[in-house]
Image 1: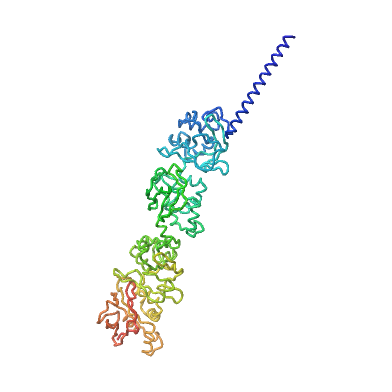
Image 2 (image 1 turned 60 degrees about the horizontal axis):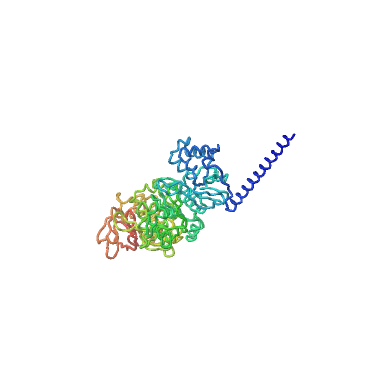
Length: 627
């Protein structure tokens, strides 16, 4: 019995000591926890390294295998502290599949190493200490020591580069902290970082809006061709200011070619220019072809063609194919400044419905002519539908199918020297910049303002007075083809009776003959064209009521007597003497500008040098009669 009591007393003593020891351990743990809380670190350090945690967790077996292949296990098993964004097996499976790899062994070791390092940040960064902004991973750009950037967005949880989200935060380790993520954080491109940062959302919209069949900006800045890139990326506020400057409501109001020029001016191809590489006065040629200048006086700043600085407000956002610097102003090249105060060439380029005209100007080299700010022009600009009708009517599939020499003259036939506003136009002849044959004789243009503004009877001004820095543009609904002598006879109502005579059913096909192209017999023609009044006087002279009273042969002979074949005889070329026509001979008095027919009847030349592409027309006040 005594033995049993003694054993019981000893057992009670041991239990008391155990209770005391447990209480001491609890108090020590509580004090330690309070001490950690006082330091602002709510994550207790685990008793295993990051590498051991990964090794002991079956959901990270692929990550462990990747670390082993890359030789990074020891790095994450040492005493240095790291923050690791750890993708699970499912995340790696998606990464491998998306990049065409069957297994980790298929990934080049150097690539795999850099991808893994892109999940590692130096130091311990608990979720509470992470904030929206850029941090550097241990991955590097190329063969440099420049660490790649990670964009952390904490507006809703924690998201990295907008491709991976933290699913389980603050897993403590003896040498840092682990945040479980739902996707592998691949090596970022310029586009990755532009897309990740919501302050570049308008820039991303601009890249998409500016892309066409020739240049896909998203693909370009995501790839390696022409890389590395240095991109000066305007913020959303910068684009807002630009739209206000241009009086535009949105990017949709900026013509695509202009937007392309602007974006190209923000990119330097073939260089990874970091902030530490910038020097005062340094110039760099952009993708657009114009230089920008760096200023460090109040900087770093970029000076564009306006002379106004853009501040570089975020530097060295390093990606795998270049570097991004955020700027607070959209920088503008001289070419865009010209467009803001556009020349005629610029207007054509930035007006979507004049895109074929713009293409034609470029093909012919006339874009340079109409871009001259030291000259003044008036251009009647055909719309795209006008060109499409012209092309199909002449058997051309596209503007590029038109012979360049022909296209050049057609375009010049829409241009006048000087500024002619619609209010100053009147019914009359003027001359275009197109010329007759190999001469310097400018072709004529008949303007009729009786009802709107009609040109050569075939094209009407639809939108007048679009002002440019070097002239004015009137948008027209038809291409003004190179005129024939028939064109002017039909266009000018002064010759209405002449046209009626030429087209009388019993007459030869004068219209086809007089439309013969220059250089093909019997063209060119010199036509002495009687006015309506001249025909009226003839009817009185002959004592008849109308043209219908003139017999067929007489009318044919009369009309032939007004045409000199095979010659483009302008007023300055007229000499005294006899000239042969398709009918009878005529006598010219060059000094007095008169023509005498075989009957001794004298006609005055009252309008001279209406120049067509296949001859010249002179208006006369009396019908010439053959014998």
